[in-house]
Length: 308
Image 1 (cartoon, rainbow, N blue to C red):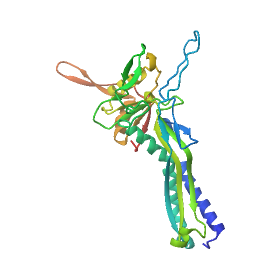
Image 2 (cartoon, helix red, strand yellow; image 1 turned 90 degrees about the horizontal axis):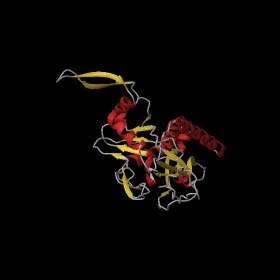
Image 3 (cartoon, rainbow, N blue to C red; image 1 turned 90 degrees about the vertical axis):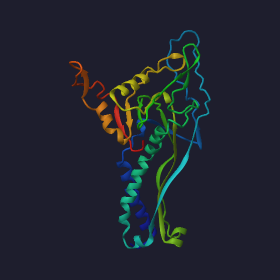
Image 4 (cartoon, rainbow, N blue to C red; image 1 turned 120 degrees about the horizontal axis):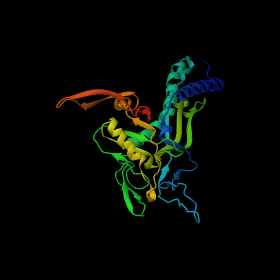
């Protein structure tokens, strides 16, 4: 290829097409557990966290819900990946070998929010949320019906790999994915750039300014106990009976079960199989195995993430 401004422009268009093919063809699932928020500054402060206002009968004056200043902020971070293409490869018409790499960059950019959001879930046993407690904790402070401080759990203890129940039915989610500048394909490929002059290299890359953080812990439940029908039922019950400030039921609806790769089989047995086997008493001291309908089949959408 004869290198000129027009040929480099055409090469950029071709690489960008490859990037878009990878980006548009990849599947990301973070929006099932996180809400998208557009950021306009270096960081965003989420003062409303901790409030769960609900309708009440209007008797007398309105009851004013103040947005408590918890001081929980999410600071935007810069992310990038850059590759080099040798000038000789372009002159020798070998630029086509880079198309799969550029397409992979597009796939990775699409999935990058997954790495941040599912990574936050996995770290939720140690990283703090707006109330100062770990996101998954046995001692979240909540005021009861009499205004006294009590403590609420959104976790189930154990020693195995963690699995997570999520209420993804509401406009707000347990996590926040914050976008200051979306993922974009960029280049330095002018004929007189320093990289070309000094190293005979054209630069192509992806960058973004984003971050993820914790939202409402009330909408997520984590367990390190074995993923069984019994533990799954206990986790759902704990979420659905959760009460917020002043003892009001929150109406939580767990509809997503997120698991790491190693729990895929257990998760499918719990919520995908139509039947399950149980052990019942028979003639003493014998027991028998019987097959019954699986009452939890289809009770949640299964999300399997390699980033957990």
